[in-house]
Image (cartoon, rainbow, N blue to C red):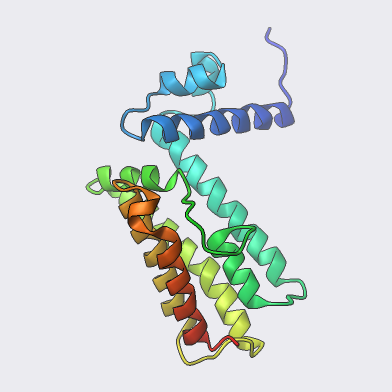
Length: 205
């Protein structure tokens, strides 16, 4: 009889697998990654890996879902507190802790793009992509809406339209980054200009 494994230990193993899988996907891309790559990188047996994930699609979707869920929960928590600056919170969601445009791009972004493009004819993946898209819009829209409600942002433009523009801008950079370098894309310069547009649209002083 095999020893009973606690839920906490199971969660730790699952997290370890996902952390290893993320690096594997970044190194190999989505299409070239195999479950054996993930198994070797996470140092688990074949049975140990398949206990948590049926295939690499499940592994990658879990990576995307948990990352987006974490950002969503963090945003909701911050919005339920006293917010000193909704503009700073919006920048946090766009650029991370630095809150300033830079040349760095999420290394998983081009792989995420590859995942959805190669699965564009797969109904299940299209459905998941649609859900993820609107989930992302909601994160930005909620911040903008609260900023408008608290009179830090202008109500001249609809919060959801602005949120869609932010998502489209980020996705557009990810598309370019899949084939070009950060220097060729001029990520920082484009981001600075986009921030200036947002300031103008929201009438941020």
